[in-house]
Image 1 (cartoon, helix red, strand yellow):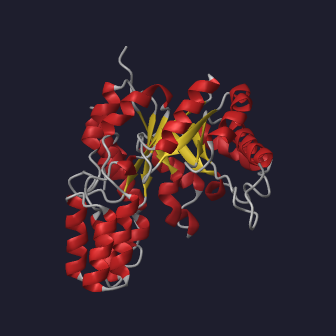
Image 2 (cartoon, rainbow, N blue to C red):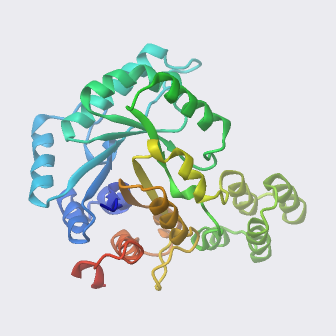
Image 3 (cartoon, rainbow, N blue to C red):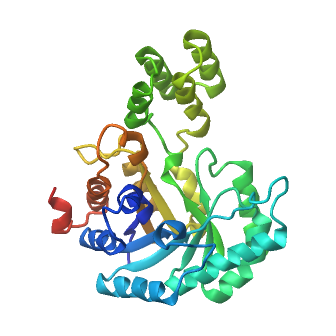
Length: 337
């Protein structure tokens, strides 16, 4: 039987609408279900008031499960934050970091999640120490591989080696497709220009990105030609983004169990302006990936100064693109603008 990639949505995509009270949790989940994107990923702090400092009452957990049942959706992943810098002048003690991860494991288990997402900055020793507890709870901890890091970065290799040495299936990876930024996002460039970056400087930086020019040279050139200002901030983005090869996921596929389909702008012709999703899906199919790929819209912050954010339309377009790439017949909700 052919392995099947499944469609999902990170509710992080709707941060503007939920924060401003334009959409409720139920409305968001209902739209995802109508799009045929049954996998639901959350950030606990966004979806559940008071988490993690105050805990979440059983009534809220029961309502979550009610919504999952009502809309036939699947809890996929809880994206947790480890605040290891919360104490001034010293890191959080190791044992406290591990206990914090265990707290998120318990929370994910209450929600019926199979996975929790760890920020890339968390040390491998912390996740290895929490792995036996996760395994007992039926949870897998996934380290998010996020730009500027990538699968050939020493920090990611260190994690991979630690996971193999621990000989546990409770540790894995969650690649963020922002690693594969083949073009400088158009919405980024336009926002920097609105912020005061000269057009010539913006064009220069965009061309430098296309040419894969070393970021430090670009920043220096921008400073010399245009001086300090938003143009330097635009040039700084080159330090944190690059066009790594999607095929590098293949060597790590046995430990890849969820994917963030980062995107900044879905165009009218149903393509992502910057990220080559046709190549991404080709690699995932080649690797036999059968987990969820969850829409993660982050273009909102780049356009909210000039227009009302329409995350729903952007997610609709990406999910329709997914259907085309997976040879799926799209549900009617994806075809109606």
